[in-house]
Length: 110
Length: 120
Image (tube, rainbow over all chains, first blue to last red; front, side, top):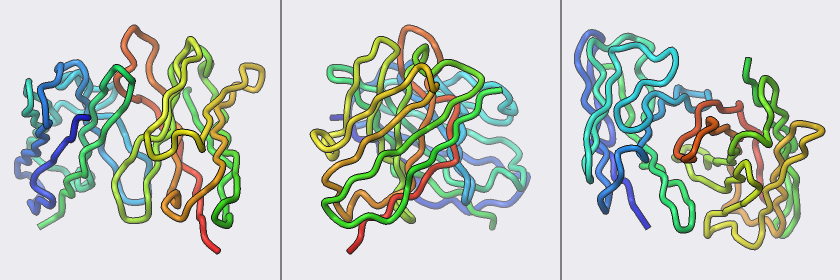
């Protein structure tokens, strides 16, 4: 079973700064199986990135995803006040199908 | 517009049962893969179950044998029957949709969740 480890646990930055969030898998993944979600306090998760690097519909271009194998990155350039939230990576595994989430990275306003 | 609205949560004693419902609009639940994901208070996201368009269903080990996912095409509704509930099942339960396509990898629309509390 694949384990996803996100780092850092908490990231404190100021609006306008650049955020880099990491997601490491315990074994190599297909890039197509990696997604990122944003969850604001009291809200449902929102899909940001799928296929490791494709932005979901309506997601601003300051959000970007990259990576391959075991190491994946979510980058947010020029943080906006509404970007401060918890971010989760998620992977899909087959045989049998299962979905795994990382433990989350909390992006805090500094 | 795609919308998902969950209901059916509540307070239940250990060993009890609940059935959650997720009413969908803007698409047909039987044409997409659908999932339940839960979030314990103050914790992260945990996948619970998925049902594919073809009807195949799969479960997390933590709920296998106790939970059953199903759907009703006529009501365009997804269900989660939860039996033999345990305190560790206490969580906000979200239903979510996967986009139509060959590989059921991610979830593009989410409901707002329904809270299940298992306690005596």
